[in-house]
Length: 294
Image 1 (cartoon, helix red, strand yellow):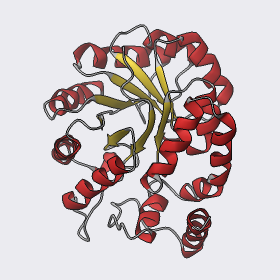
Image 2 (cartoon, helix red, strand yellow; image 1 turned 90 degrees about the vertical axis):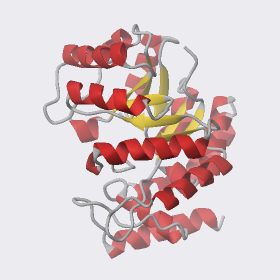
Image 3 (cartoon, helix red, strand yellow; image 1 turned 60 degrees about the vertical axis):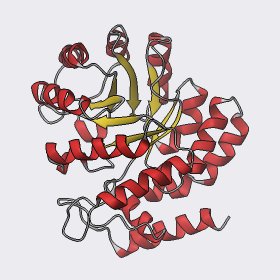
Image 4 (cartoon, one colour; image 1 turned 180 degrees about the vertical axis):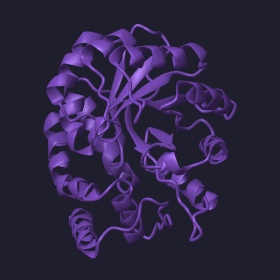
């Protein structure tokens, strides 16, 4: 199966107004900004998009808006995952009516499951979905981690096409890519690991950093994929302090503040997320300015 995308996919912020309602006009501008700056795919209603606080109606409206604005210029990947297999299936079916190109499906959280349960969960989704499934593994949030052997089993289903891997274990990533060969496309979910991940065979990144530096993230990822490791490494080092500052509080709290610093205010956060401390704001501001000014 052809990769859904190669390069830099942005885990897009969902902008809200002062009352916490979705600001669709700002959302449309963010999509245009990403496309103009060469982002290779747009992920809507993921972790960074505060998908867990959005209603089904809001998610579907965001999917439809993204598809309409993108007009086929880049793939639109919709966050349709849940800890309930049946709910995920119903959301997948409704989401596909909006025209999205692929699904990003997080591992079940809170109730979690076994490795066998993971296989059954994803096979159930893949059997019903018309669009390809990208598995999302983020153990720091879900308490659930996918083993290399489970990935190999998932790779055997023709409609499970890729993985957003947000486990920082590079040795596990290498083993998994080796086991799955070319049957799964891997995208790193950690902005501080883009260089080593693409060097090890990842097709790209699903990035928080790309919200504030889309062109840079695209270029860094492209250089790594082309085999220009020295150039990619230099770019990775340049933004490492900024990446760490973007995760000095719970994502997407810092990145939304960074967008405000760049005069692209994306509004309030939905509770339980709230603004970070002044100390962290200063740290992020300094890190952002250091990159921009150099």
